[in-house]
Length: 191
Image (tube, rainbow, N blue to C red; front, side, top):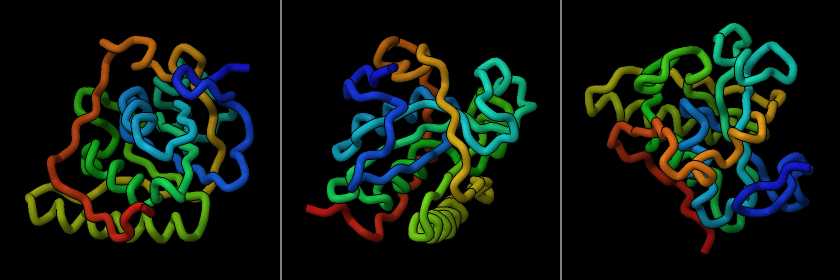
C-alpha cells in the first residue's frame, strides 16, 4: 500500500471518523498538493483526477484531454483545525479561476478550475465564495470565474510518482500563480 511521503499514512485508506474531505482542481496538481499539505489541520493530500467520464484513467489518457478529467488534489482535513472556508480562500487566491481550460502555460481541459463538494454545506459555501470572489475579481478588472463546481463524483488517484511530487523533487515544476486579489474568509478557523 502506498503511503504519503510526508504524513506516512496510507493514501488509499478510508477517511477517518471525524475528518472531512475536499477536492480542488487548480491546474497542474503538484503545486496545489504542496500548498495544502503545508497547512495546519491537513491530515492527508493526494494528487489525482476527477470530473471525467473514464474509470481509473492514466495520466497519459488524461493529458490527451479526451477523458474529461481535471487534475485535482484530494484533501483530508480536520475541520476543528482548518475550516472549509479557509480551504476555499487558499483555492481562490492561489490560481486564476478566470482562465477556462488552462492555468498559465498549462493548456487543456485537464487544467481547468474545479471544486468537488461532498456535502450540501460544502456546495453552499463553494457557490457563495465563487459569487464573492467573482465580484472581487470584477472590481479589479478580471473576467468572469470559469470554475466548475460539482457534487460528489469518483476521484481517481494519480500514479505513485506524481504523489507528493514537489517533496520528492523540490526543484520540480510548480505552475501556481494567483491573481493577487484577496478572497474573504467568512468563518475564521476555530481557535
